[in-house]
Each structure stands twice: as C-alpha cells, then as structure tokens.
Image (cartoon, rainbow, N blue to C red; front, side, top):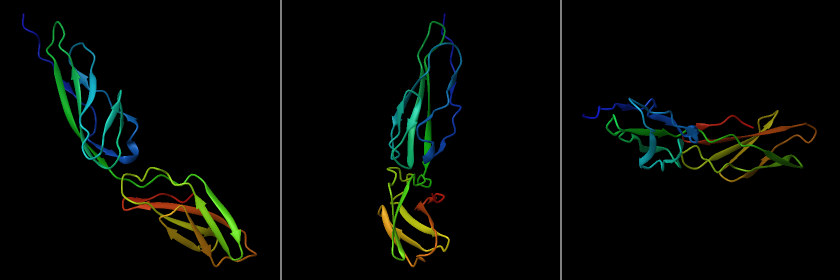
Length: 169
C-alpha cells in the first residue's frame, strides 16, 4: 500500500520587524499525523536562530526557516521553507535617566540598550522641559546648558537610528 502525500505549509508572514525577535514562530500545518519540527536552513544576514519555536535575530536582513514532518505509517515525509525578511525599527526607549544639576546646566546620563533596533549607530537627544534646551550625542551622557537656575525641570532622552526614533523617556 502506497503512503499518502502530505501537504505542509506555514501560517507565518515572511515580514518581521526587528522588535518581533524573541516571538514564537506560528505553527506550520500538515495533513496527517506526526510532530512538526522547526529549524533555520540559512541564518542569513539577519543571524536568525530558533530555540524551539522562538525566533531571534541579531540584525535586520533575511533568513530561511524550515518546517518538517517525518514519514509515518500512512504518510510520506514533508518539509516547507519560508524566507523571512527582518525590517529594522527604532531602538527601544531609554529605560532610566539620571540628572546632576549644575549652575545653568544639567548633566544628563542614561544606560543605553544593547539593542539598536537592527539599524546602525544610535543617536541620543536629551531635552529639558520646559524650555526645550537639548544636547545630542552618540554617547550615554551629555550636558544641557542655558537653564534657568530658578526653574524646575524634567528631562527626557530620545534614542534614534536611521530606522526611526523612540518616544522620549
């Protein structure tokens, strides 16, 4: 008795944002019985890796994933591949901002995320509120000058790359 052909397909979009890394890959579907396994065929320039069905990648780019189901008593083995494109996005928001006040100035510092949104060097803009005085840098601190010593200020830091900017924190 001949084994039955089996269809296997992905229910996965091939376009992911860089912020999607660490999300579970949707399950592929197959006719018949058997456990579907998942693997990276080509990590590509995105550096894709699977841990179970959790997809991670190190940069924007592309990679190829495979779903496979083994032969069973009734069905032939089957596999299906999908190319995944990872689009860069803005870096994550700066989690904490520290401020040291001086005379008419403030030294603003933060701990940058190791994540750049998948798109190049991160540029930061620290801003004083009210007033809008600011400083820009690629470092993790800068000095805002021109502050009124009698005013009360709050400060925000916005991270940006060529792919976009976060909201200020």
